[in-house]
Length: 160
Image (cartoon, rainbow, N blue to C red; front, side, top):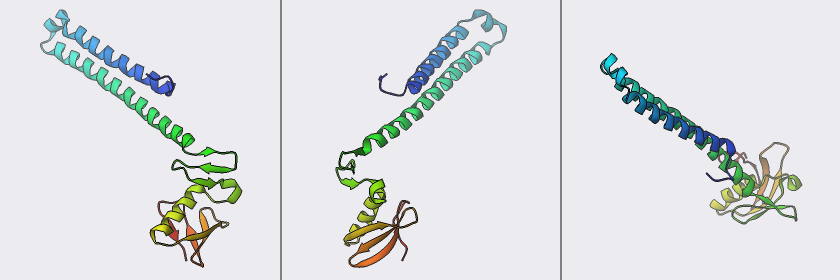
């Protein structure tokens, strides 16, 4: 297990291995128990299989929880690495584009990117983007015409 991963995820993976090993070991013990075999026919097999199944299911559940934590940690790590702050008060995005810092312009860099892509797909050039008093709503000047645009959802919407 890699040391830079989440410690809780690593611990859950170890617990998963432990429960699987315990289930396999206990099933061998029950399958080899002669007293149990002579007591009730079929009981030895049933108990052995149930011990094996419970160990496997418990271990797999622990592995599943560990994987969820690893995925969430990966998303968190990517969000930290996705935008890095430079000294000149601009962000550099993953694709290398420099975008003005959100606090200095009032424009969310993701919203600006979405708006520019939206109008670029329609062969229109964005001259300026100005935030309004509403969150995620901007006044966009395109080809000498001002449009009210809502961004930040799944799609960009032109409101007027």
